[in-house]
Image 1 (cartoon, rainbow, N blue to C red):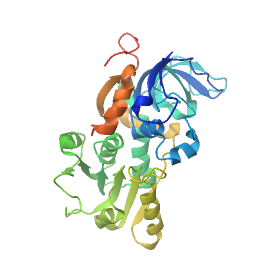
Image 2 (cartoon, rainbow, N blue to C red; image 1 turned 90 degrees about the vertical axis):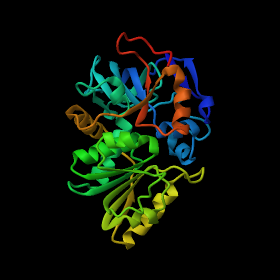
Image 3 (cartoon, one colour; image 1 turned 120 degrees about the vertical axis):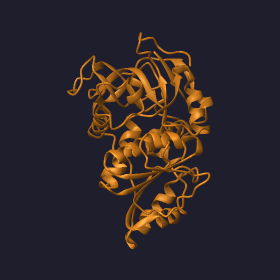
Image 4 (cartoon, rainbow, N blue to C red; image 1 turned 135 degrees about the horizontal axis):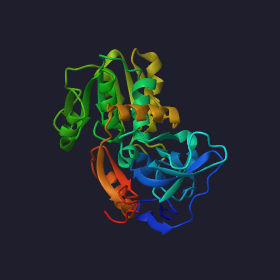
Length: 335
């Protein structure tokens, strides 16, 4: 099969299209014919090996343990392991795989859900990683309630576009913060108020929020606290910047250490990659409460360009790698 591989950490220059063997599946795994795959920050961190905590988390200290890049996946099951009970060949699925920038990939059955009726492979290919992160941040961690005011910093990105739609569907009044080119997009997906961070500072706004999701942001905790209600909750979702060892984790740790001594709740989390959460996201998509926001489309051969675009551009939603043309099942080899 064709796949995008990397044998060392680095920029997109370390990625190459190669022909390798199809992955072998374990007893609890399925083999998926990949139709589409999402492009997200987590994949970028696995490509670069930064911060170094990523390497220490089990992905390979010196070089990647798995040379095939890609997490989000959507496709059709072609084979199942001996212990698999949730799927059978022919099922259309989406979720999180072990290297989705390839014609075929292996995935744990417990990290997959069935593709919602009416949704395309491209739509659900961008939904698992970002969708479950947004859902868990709002509900499991943020305990959002109908009528609450919610501020979403980073509202135009992969997690942000899911968070805006989910918060609205759960009855919240949503303010989104994004760049100037994304204001219309964030408003179109349901935000009640949209702030362009280049001309408006949420600190200067007179609104106060019951829940703040700071997605991959670099705002000081003190700035976020200043617009949080006295008993409000701040959920730091991911984090960029920082040093090469820990990245943005330092800000999260400081927030959590401060939280027990104040009335506000300051917290963070690591999303749980389990089918129950993915199925919850699938339910929102099937009901129409969520329409995944796709930025750009790339062919499998253009994954390096997709990763450069992720690094250099402010995207609307998430980009998608189209591996197989759903109209005629051809492998995509051009943009």
